[in-house]
Image (cartoon, rainbow, N blue to C red):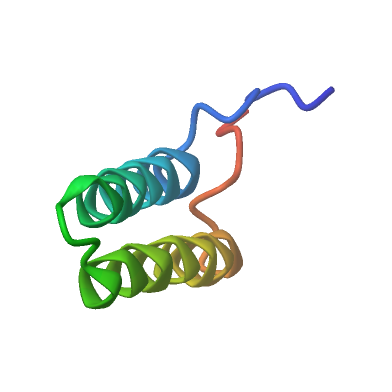
Length: 66
């Protein structure tokens, strides 16, 4: 396993964006009637989290700093 175990700015940023995406999507699915646009905004945020992680990792923000 990696030395940093995910404790990097890239990992934390991706997790926070994905968490917001899951919450937004969950709220969209919980409304009555179901709000599919809100659900898809949540899905898009999760995809943005993946892209943000890759970009930040390539910028060197996923290094352990050792």
